[in-house]
Image (cartoon, rainbow, N blue to C red):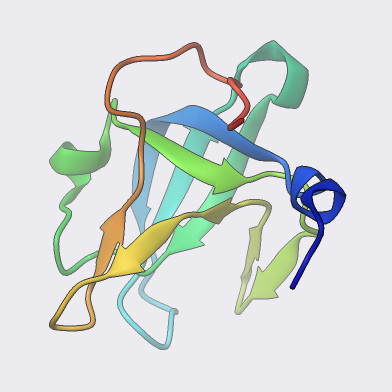
Length: 110
């Protein structure tokens, strides 16, 4: 079990997807996302294996939640700076987690 203080160390923020690019080099189908987290965090990039449920048009302008304080991770030729959060559905495809209503980019999960 972790403490509440441990939980607070994970910085989860809302951001708006501003670009979606193909990622043909990925081992599993994925998109390269560019997400705006507002002035404090800035614009960050992420590789996301969410192609089963989301096309480019589904993601552009969508708000997502992401962990923004993990170290960057090299995924093939791409440097993923944040971890976009999701849940696996019954078919093991990822469903993205985002706010129910619009919030300011950079809003921290509490």
